[in-house]
Amino acid sequence: MSESTIDTATFQEWQARQKEAAEVAATAKANPTVPPTQSVPKGSATAPGTTAGSEAGPQTVQTSSPDAEQSAGQDAANAPKVQVAGEPGKAVATPDNSTDLPEQAGLETADEPKAPDPFLIRLQVLLDRADASPGVIDGFLGENTRKAIRAYEAMRKLPVDGKPNADLWNVLVVDQGKAMKTYTITKDDVSGRYVQDIPSDYAKLAEMKWLGYRGPAEKLAEKFHMDEDLLKALNPQTDFSHAGDAILVADTGAPPSTKVMRITVDKEKGELTVFDGAGNIVMSAPATIGSQDTPSPSGKVTVVAVAQDPTYEYDPHKNFTQGDNHHDLTIPPGPNGPVGLVWIALSKPTYGIHGTPNPSLIDKDASHGCVRLTNWDAEALSKLVQPKETRVEFTG
Image 1 (cartoon, rainbow, N blue to C red):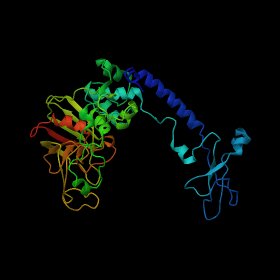
Image 2: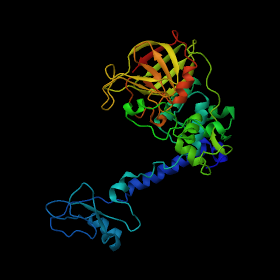
Image 3: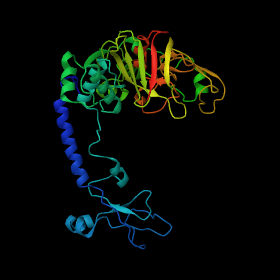
């Protein structure tokens, strides 16, 4: 996928592809490739290559109704049969042109995207540049991108539905800025304090001095707000380890600079929204917010302090227990630490807004009660809040 392919992508072209994909999916659902299974009397011969499915002995099944078999022809009737995993005594015919096992074929749908879409990459970059963060830029239309669309629609006083449409696109592309740019890898990029292995166990983390990036690719992906897999897919000519290599990256622009007075954290939607003193939205970002076992606070609190490159004080007696670790631990700083690159402390003890070592999992898993953002969103927010003044309200 080239720079021009992304920078010339339009909503109309994407809409046409969506329509075509929907038609293919509808056809696939109307004419399934995996025929239905039916039980047959015990004692029927098992097809070659299948295995016995129960203590009662091997069984196979008819793979379609008599009428369907007649219309499908003798070849379909004689197709080899494959045992259905987890279903003793059942098997389905395997089409001659398929190497999938039935359960594998059933998991794949015609309308599920298999690769990043150039329009969605451009859309995500432009939303990010407008301070409506989609989380990681990955080229897929996930819930975090829909949140960003809703936030941008609210910013621009458009009807809010969270869906790409012509009106949204016409307003978003007014800046005429390119979504992508060429970046030259520097010596600093390739000579960072990289850490090859980051253990998951907190006791092992506590023995380390720095929880850095695993390599230049991870660092560069975060620098440009991108999914690491997308960065690698767009730059197959490099391994990101050589200064002077030119790579294609998202042009995310400058972060917001307006100081904020109020932050809302919607626990139900998994979304953080930042407002200035006049009530205008300054920034929005997807967030991982608490869990049923360790819920986030309710009501209103205040930002009390900001710490860059924070250590993490693990106290299993105050909030949660990680693995078999039942003693206090001090975990070193770094982007791959439990709280990422920044900690925004709240007036409720032990709670804060912070970064994460896993940006692609934002709002796809649960936190231990704090508000977790991507490292870049947390860093941007840390420059906007005003300790003792910025209020944080938890809703939902």
